Length: 376
Image 1 (tube, rainbow, N blue to C red):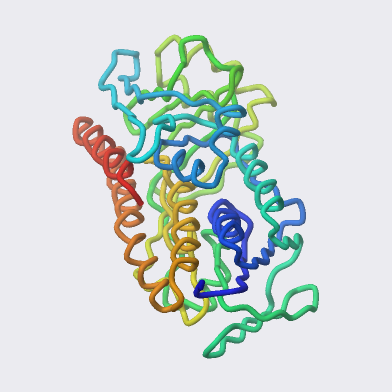
Image 2: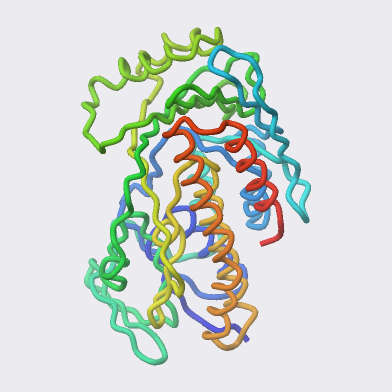
């Protein structure tokens, strides 16, 4: 018998949807509320390494990623003008034959997962969130912004890096800390020579290209910015093109005109991270994903560890008849992987900001990928 019969998920992002899908497949009743009435995941592309592919396979979604995204192998890291610095292998993760690396449009992955959430039988309410959560010894009574009230055995908080739930129930936790870099993302026509994740490591700059379909790829640039500052959106194309000029490699230079086109759909975000010490629950409210383990994109694993956490939580809730035992096992399985991703990503960022040892940078990436390939 499962530890819970009815669960509420607050937040319809990747981790929340993963938990909802897997809980329903275990026969547990699930409601999900998402404040965005369009349920629209913004952004350009997302890199998916093998561990994340394995998690999506667990949800039955891997074949759709293959069909609608791009599955590749390996990571190539170059000096700014082109010479190869190192090749990092990306073998299939333990227990799976999925691809070791790849990419997909973030909105495309969101649509794949939202469709699966509905197909699983989750009761989804859009444009809705909670107003109050009153916890008792054996459940939680939740009042919603639409005026309704429902009772649950467990509430899963997955409302993102700027979580209102965290502010309310974990008031001692500070806001995510700006880490000294910003990331630019843009959509580009796929270059014939880009058949895997390819990066150029420059002076306080890193540029990457990753295929996300047969015809398109996405570009990202991480840029050192000591102070978090507002950048006028009207200037984004010119700023991005200027950053690209620091990479004399012909492939990068050929893409500069595309950075100035509206189709580039440029996005800029300052980078921050957060790692909340366990336990991640307060009574019958448990937080997962970016609410407690928000990482910078240096290991391309933020979405992946969130999806994993949703899966592990659902499996432990279904496999144990005691809620306290299920939550203890969840915490035991998730802490080290999430800690490693957040802290190693921060270390990579520190090396880039301080123009540190590129060999150490490559070693951390390689060792992290090996660790992530292990079972969850």
